[in-house]
Length: 124
Figure (tube, one colour):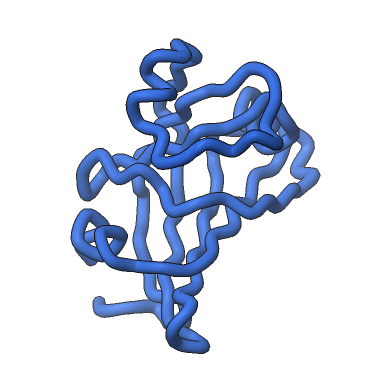
């Protein structure tokens, strides 16, 4: 699956799941990822639980459901590779303002370990 092409036109909702070092899971609604290339995505994150979990456990899963069709979307299995907190870099990639997000923000990059359709195992 070419995620660079998929996310150019996809409209819908995303959910990211993370876990802390002891395995306690959290899920949060997130926007469409910023696709760097077919192997790298980034998210702007506030300094909240999702970001905190990634400090001790770099693995995450992102589930995206399209708004047009009931069971169409993508699942991305991710590993954090780096993060930046330079406000200028965050603003440069930001698509729109979220006034309810206050405080420090991070640009968190992930390697896409696997991309699968919303339902099923995908093409072998």
